[in-house]
Length: 115
Image (cartoon, rainbow, N blue to C red):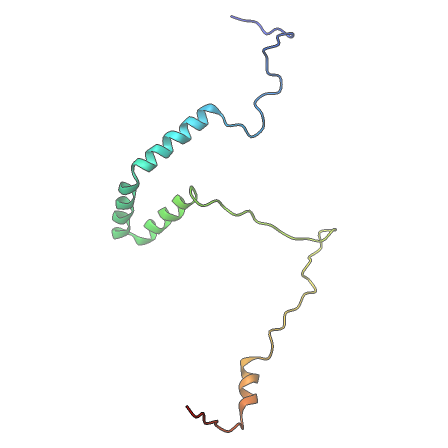
């Protein structure tokens, strides 16, 4: 049994560097990836079998599986310096309504086009 010695130069006092992978976690991820890659055809058949009985459940499985492939987008909020809403005074105008445009066409004669 070894004892901790304060002056031992082999001790990593800073711990694992930030962002470095844990060796065991990395091995588990690699094993899981191999398992999934080796069963892609089976997974497709399994989802088809589930869809035959319950399409909603099959869709739910597809959505859950997509979490491992497609990264989730982070939600971002834009606020002013004091947390004020940046868009509180913003107004959008998209031009006249369809009804107003149709009303403006009343009274126009049909135009004949020579082809």
